[in-house]
Image (cartoon, rainbow over all chains, first blue to last red):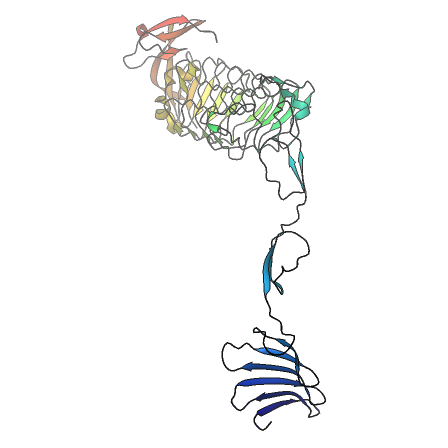
Length: 404
Length: 77
C-alpha cells in the first residue's frame, strides 16, 4: 500500500473499522469497512473523472467485490440498475411495478374519502350525492306543497290535484309557523293562496319568516292564506321584512273572527306590492289587542284598506309612527269601521300628499264612530295640505286636534 | 245636501283643533275660523261636478262653493 495514503477509523480498542485510500494518480477514492480480521468487507469507491458513477461494493473474504450498486453495470458481479416507476393510485389495492422497472418510485394516492351518511331528498331536483353512502328519496306525490316548511304538513294540508286545485285536509290542526323562513308555493306567483281552512286555530307566528325567493316581484306570498280560519294570534314577520317584497298579506286574515291579538314585529311596514292591503277586513277587534307601537314607517300600500269593515277597539295609537311617505300607505286603512273613537299620532312628522287616500277612498271614510284624531301641534300646516283634509279624511263628524 | 258650520279653534296652551260639525267652541278655546261644510243626505255622497271627486263631507274654502257639488247615491261595494 505504499502507493496509497490511508486514513483509518478506529474503535475504542484501537482496531481499524474504517479505512480510506486513494491511488497515486488520485484516480479512485475508496472508503473500506474493515472487519475484526482487518479485512475489507465493504467498499465505497468512485472515479474522480466524470461520467463514472459512484459505486458501493460488498466485498467477500477474498477482498473481491461480490455486490455492486452503480449506474453503469460494469465491474464486479451482482450489479443492479435502479429504474423506479412513478404511478398514481386511484383505488384501494396492491400495486407492483410494471415489467422493466426495478421498483416503485413516487406513488401519488388519489383515493376519494369513503362516502358516508345519508342524503335526504324531499324535493325533485338535481343533487350531488358523491359524498353520501346512500340517498333517501321521499318526494311527496300528488303535488303536495308543504315541503319547504321544514315542518311536515303533508297530512294537514292535503294536496293539489292535476288541475292545480287544492284538496285540503279536513282534520283540525294548529299551525306552528315558528320555523318558517320561506314558503311552499302553488305557482311561482301564488305562494300560499287560500292555503288554510277554518279548522286552523291558535297562533300564526311568522316572526322568523323572511320571504320567498321565487319571482319575488310578482309574488303574492300570503294572499288569503289564513282567511276564514280560526287563527287567534298573529305575530308578523321580523327578519328582513324591511325589504321590498317581504310583506305580502293581501286579504290574508279576512273574516278571522277569532283573531284577538296582533303583534307587529318589525318597525317598517314595507312593500312594493300589497303589504297588509285588506289583510284584516271584516275582523272583530273590539276586544282585541293590537299594538302598533313598534311601527315607525309605513311603506306603499302598507295598510291600504287593512282594517276596513272591522270592529275596532275604542282607541288606537301609533305611538312611534314618524312617517307615512308612500303612496296609499294609509288609504282606507280604517274605512267603514266601527267602535274606534280616538286615533293618536304623537310622532308623525312626515306625510305625503296622498298618504290618507283621496275622494271616498280616505283613511276613515264612513268610519262613523270616530270622534277624535290627534296629531302633533306643529303638524297643522302639513296635515291641512294633505289630500282629503277638507273632508277630515272621511271622518267628517270628528274633531281633528293638533295638540300632541 | 246641507251646509253646516264647524269651528277651528285655538286653546290656551297653544294647541288647536278643527271641531266636529255642530260642536260648540269650548270655553277655554278661542275661535279662529268658521268652516262651512257641505254634507250629503243619508245614503248619498257628494260628487264634484267637474272633477268627479266624491266625498262624504266637504269643507268649502277658497273659491269652492256648494254649487260645484251634487249628490249621488252612495255606491255599494
